Image (cartoon, rainbow, N blue to C red; front, side):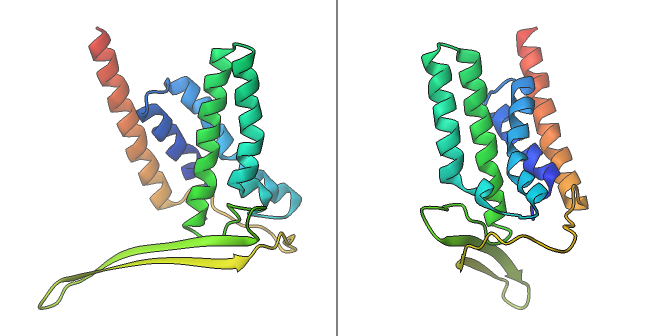
Length: 176
């Protein structure tokens, strides 16, 4: 599972590098953690990980704020939607995730690998697999144990935060 830290930092970096103000991106990125609230119901990777359901909730919010001529609220809604959509996209590369539910009864897992073999002739092999399994929203009965942050997640987060800091420093120097 992509850990909570990465579920927050990846959309934060994405939004910031797309030009969204850091404070707005930081607030909007909390939406990327929301799909994992399903664990409070003792189910994980449930309908909260469904892109069609996310869009069914987000689109009316975006349209209402736009119709009410609330540009700040509209931009937050759009940024939060982008952030939230990163969550199931990250999870689908980790294990079966119902990203198309209820349009599809299947949970999808994408396996992508690039490997190298060093011998007399170095070779690179790539794997791209799509695995489907019937979606089942079953409550877990044992303790749910998942990392908030791992070593790899911390270093990736630090690298992405450094990229944000460099971009903001450049922006500040351009202003000065």
